[in-house]
Image (cartoon, rainbow, N blue to C red; front, side, top):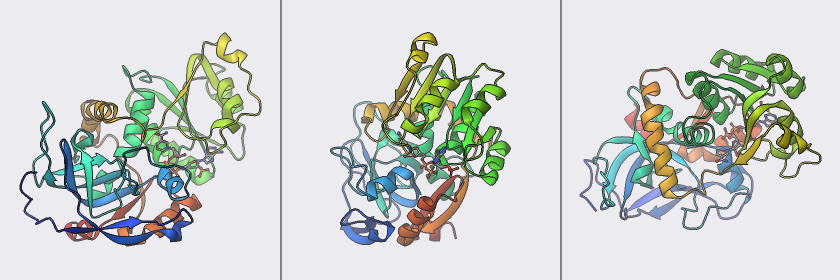
Amino acid sequence: MTPASAHPVPSTLQAVCFDAPGGPDVLHLATLPIPQPGRGEVLVRVMAAGVNRPDLMQRQGLYPPPPGANPRLGLEIAGEVAACGAPLAGQTMPAIGSRVCALANGGGYAEYCLVPAGQCLPWPKDFTAVQAAALPETYFTVWSNLFMPNLPATGSRVLIHGGASGIGTTAIQLVKAFGGQAFVTAGSAEKCALCTQLGAKAINYREEDFAEQIKTLTDGKGVNFILDMIGGAYLERNLKSLSQDGRLVIIALQGGAKAEKADLARIMTRRLIVTGSTLRARDATAKTLIARQLQEHVWPLLAAGQIRPLIHATYPLADAAAAHQALEEGNHSGKIVLITPYGASAQG
Ligand SMILES: NC(=O)c1ccc[n+]([C@@H]2O[C@H](COP(=O)([O-])OP(=O)(O)OC[C@H]3O[C@@H](n4cnc5c(N)ncnc54)[C@H](OP(=O)(O)O)[C@@H]3O)[C@@H](O)[C@H]2O)c1
């Protein structure tokens, strides 16, 4: 382990924990020992941590962490490198004291968090800690599902369900930045208006049938890609909305894992691809590859101000329960982010 940063690393940290699954009120702060970075790992002094729907599911006991992952909540952070383990072969570790944002394998809701060095990305120029912490989970997810390998969604028509979500607001901007046209579903006029401002054609799914609207909006051609977080309840209409050689990518099952009816003949006659993924379960090699692609293709767009994370609200780390309550209520657009005491003092 390399020597500590300008800030001496204490022996304990405060982290958000829960003893048994339940509602937001099971979350509480606990004091834990500071972990030592192992080979290829970085200890980050956390300034801000993003809150994501998978965290809510984990708290409810519906999304257990994969084997070997940190069992505590928090999948994305921004902060300062406090210490580094020995590098893996060929690896360059970030400098002590440098600012990074990182995809964490859990444990991000804390004052310090261990992350694999390959999952760190530079802190985009002029970004606040809150903005930097709001990037990794949605950018890794959207990029890996729509743009890997070989930038397939470039210049495409892409339907994104949940357009006003953290994932949705990221996907709209990336699709637009890569020359495509985003179509979204959202559940209110306000959320539709926000998605329209970001460059999408928005459909209020509570008032209109999205498959009918996609048909009209695309002159009957359909979309090339669908980024879907609903699953079973939308399968039939998703298949109906895809063009020839279209691809349905399922990343969540808010509308159930089972589809009551779906005309599978569409898959054959239109040569559709139905796929999906969960980011957390992917191994370090896959996550590192996604990080390097983001650094090459997307971080320059963030630095240029061409795309930005949309921040809905921030909460102190100690109020993680209130942040979960807000995400659960679903009135947000974009991201909800926790700020640690160090993040609050560093930002003034
Ligand atoms: N597979 C992966 O690797 C991965 C990684 C990260 C996140 N995810 C998933 O991606 C989703 C978004 O995550 P997030 O953190 O961005 O959460 P979030 O901000 O809470 O977004 C959830 C969204 O779902 C939308 N929604 C609910 N029912 C809908 C319906 N019937 N039709 C269309 N939209 C509907 C909501 O839109 P309205 O409020 O407008 O109804 C809301 O915007 C979550 O389901 C999460 O589990 C998957």
